Amino acid sequence: MNATTNQSITVEEFNVISDVFSQAITGELIGMSNFASLTDTIDDPYEKMEAVEHANSERMHAEGFAAYAKKQKLNVKINLNGEYWGNVRKQFLSYAQQKDFIACLIIQEVMLESFAISMYTDVGNALGGEASELFLSIADEEKEHLEHSTDILRKELQKDPVAFIKKFEEIHFNCMTILAQFSATTDLRGHCGVCNGDCMKGSLHHIALDIVTMRGNAMALYADALDNIGIPGEKSTVWLAQLPA
Amino acid sequence: MVSSTSSIDFAVIGHQDNWEGIERFVNGLRTPEQGKLSVEKIKSIFPFIPPRVLFNVQVKSITGSQINGIYIDTFFDPDKLDIQYSKANSSKVIQAASCAEKEGARITTLGGFTSIVLEGNFNYFARKATKFTTGNTLTAAYIVKGVETAAGQSHINLANSKLLIVGATGDIGMACVTYFKNKVKQLLLCARSLNRLENLAKFLLEENVNIKFSVSVDELLQDADVIICVASTTGLNFRDCKKDALICDAGYPKNLDKRIHDNPEVQLFHGGMGQVSMGFCFNPDYSNSIYCYPVPGIAHGCILEAMVLAFENKIESYSTGRGNITTDKIEEIYACGLKHGITLAPFHNAYGLWPD
Image (tube, rainbow over all chains, first blue to last red; front, side, top):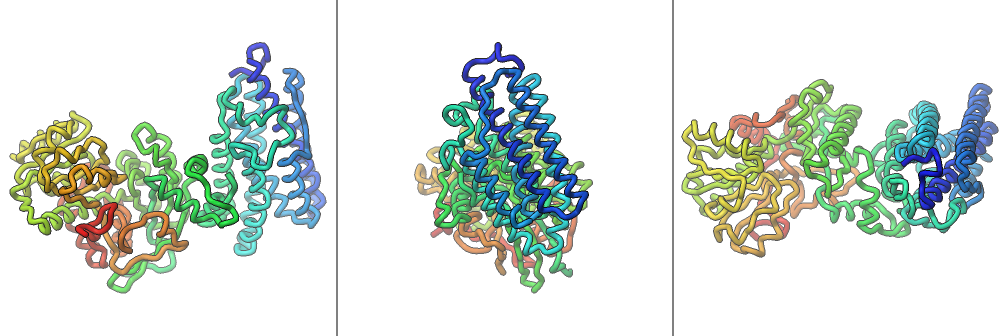
């Protein structure tokens, strides 16, 4: 698959690539907004500056995707208030309003970044040319966000393991439930409000992808992230098994 | 011998071999509000989960000592246990091995298909702080002791019997060959690789062992009084077996039970299984959904080998490679197990205890 020029792709490929870019740009803008909101929860001036830097990094990712989409004349639709992205944002804001920095970090840098890294990698490997390079390079940059949060969260876990795991569990079910519904074979809460026509998940085969593998890989990376933070496998297995599918 | 009680004495790396058990396990974790997932949905989740600790295990010895262990599941897809998936499965085993090491397990056994990795990559595992064993020696012990005991109960004189071993050139198959080579009237050897079979046959003929071999089980089946299926096989037609043949299903997964109806007079039991007489405790307890057996305390020999070695404070790679299991080692590990009340499991198959 070479998505560098739209001359070599079919209508079906064009439509699904358009939807993939729509989701990526929307996701990056959600990330940018989340990091911007995160700055209010941070007292440490250096961490505050880092959050702004991360917000800017997500903005640049969104711009990178948007520039490519414009060049290829893709049919991009951006909607930050759709069923899934909007509700993820609401979850984030509910913790940001409580100035709960750790909860915000868990949502943005563990949950959303795990999905972004994994899905960008899958898309990057499926698409050829410039699009592939774009997705894979952004996936690499997102990995740094995940690693950054892992160090902080590992220390937080060590301070009070019982309280931390309880808090993480609550956030897992509040936020990962939405991502699990979003990434299920069929949208479990209706249309996402981002795809142009029907849900793109049924059309991913046109670019040699399938939602079962993409979702599975994303959940696997999330599970690895939980392991790296130090969440016991006995716990995370139950959390994963209890998500909607 | 003193066993520690606070650290992780042993780890078991394993996998599930059927979707029915996985469905029970996954849906057993879900609340009524979350609802049950269909097998199809579970198939889209389960194999993607990275290897991780599923539960803790406490085991008591009849000597009064106690050991602590962990069970790490590799989350293999049970439909993808064939050799063609070995690369992906090996990668999961290596992840699971790292998990065991990270948890500080002193000795780790590789249960079921996970042991294939250790049979071929011993150098990789030899460098690890944790000692790894395939558990094949105790599995072999429970197979051969089980066959001897079951034959005795069924009034079958092994010295006058022809013993068919299906999967004769594998690690456990060769252990069975070595154990029985001078104890039966004739060894009937079957394996997929003719080259390996010929090499094994050459070695045995030099020792004047009475053998017959073939890559086709059909050519050997009708002569067999006793059959050990070490390799999981689909080619065994029970209608061609002697009517009162004794069959030890020691394959993984065990898949011969459904064929009993083709020849109800055969006597089939699940081989390679042991039992902890003092029982073991799982936390969380998933014994109602996975690893279900007719009576408590039953486990595969490969799993029990880690427990026996931990009880004995014998922290070594006891079973490694292929073809290294001697009769002396079979007797040694079996005897070590008995010291701690870890014995041959009661005979059973998928329909319950045997004979019922």
